[in-house]
Length: 82
Image (tube, rainbow, N blue to C red; front, side, top):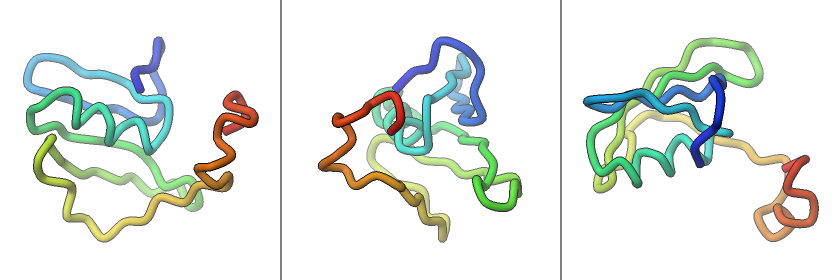
């Protein structure tokens, strides 16, 4: 889930900041880091700043929805597009 360069999905832990490839991956980084992280991104629709926090045991309690255009069963049909 880690991006090799800065992306709109920033995940900050205690000692470092990572960038995720997508909204799904930013939550995956929270699981891998095994510590409280702060996640900053923007709404893909309106551009509003979104800030939430989570860790590997406690999902964010924000009232947010992640919408995936491609159903999970088809993600690997064209992973570059997904």
